[in-house]
Length: 323
Ligand code: HEM
Ligand SMILES: *[C@@H]1O[C@H](CO)[C@@H](O)[C@H](O)[C@H]1NC(C)=O
Ligand SMILES: *[C@@H]1O[C@H](CO)[C@@H](O)[C@H](O)[C@H]1NC(C)=O
Ligand SMILES: *[C@@H]1O[C@H](CO)[C@@H](O)[C@H](O)[C@H]1NC(C)=O
Image 1 (cartoon, rainbow, N blue to C red):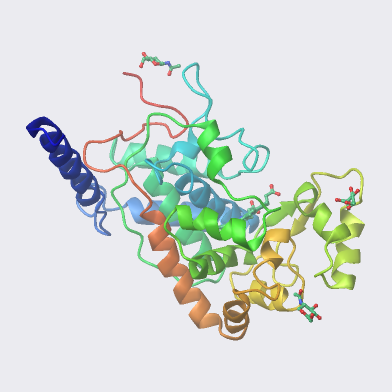
Image 2: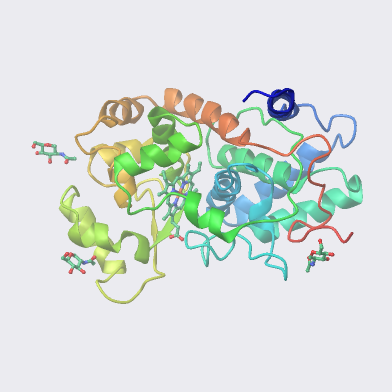
């Protein structure tokens, strides 16, 4: 049974897996000699985009999440930025992404500035990771050190996006297993969901909650119904955090405690279940939330990046380099 060949095959497989892990090391100073101005170019562009439209900070944060959370093999690889081609249908038309993801122009503008400054050096996946952090900071959150050195994918998958991104209609157990499949604990699900302290959602994603859920504050529900009727207005926007919609703070958790979560999935985190105590404690302690959020974002940014000579540095974020 265990012929020398199968042993060798096993050993090779094992070594390759190990190398993948080792190769996956990122570092915070990755561009310090190859493109010293990279971080300031990104920060300037994000700060200016967020000051002209606060919501852009939310959109850029979500872009990083949707980039990283898709593939089991390739995670934070800029795949979310790829337009469809003759060879593949990408992630942009996936159910959670279509007519929803924003910020592509901001990333494209940063990329063209970086191509002038340091051609072929800074990956799109890294730009998105840094832009997410700078967005949180621009909206009043706490900073974290972004690990760098990701490379960009040469393909993207619609199916993977549809299968991996969490649904706002899910219950706690489904959300917990979706995060667990990516190596995230239930605690990390809770802290990362705190991203919904900024940004907007469309009526289609919270209509059933504001009309049919019972674990909802009644005046919050009727006020949301003004802008999201039972029929029509599918794309009408509502703030995910109705109190401080453009500030990265712990208000989201206070809202959950007050039964004012906008998405069904949000309120699942405070629904007489196992996540209640963590939600309660974040609702009372902003600093702990902000610190834990940064740590969880670093972990999210580590989801199976392409490194070394894998993938490529795309010259334009929306398409694979011409060969
Ligand atoms: C826990 C599971 C999650 C679910 C079910 C979920 C679902 C959603 C939905 C349905 C929207 C509104 C999209 C639309 O109406 O077009 C949204 C927006 C948003 N999500 Fe999540 N999300 C989750 C986790 C996360 C995580 C982990 C992050 C980031 C770390 C995040 C960041 C955001 C942001 C910032 C927005 C607002 C985007 C904007 O205004 O452009 N979400 N999410
Ligand atoms: C599709 O893939 C082939 C083979 O890899 C490549 O030569 C071609 O340029 C790709 N087409 C597009 C539109 O990316
Ligand atoms: C609320 O639930 C009822 C009964 O299940 C269903 O017919 C109706 O479509 C739901 N309303 C919304 C807005 O989801
Ligand atoms: C939790 O259970 C209590 C007692 O049954 C109930 O009054 C309350 O509304 C529930 N809270 C949530 C968020 O479901």
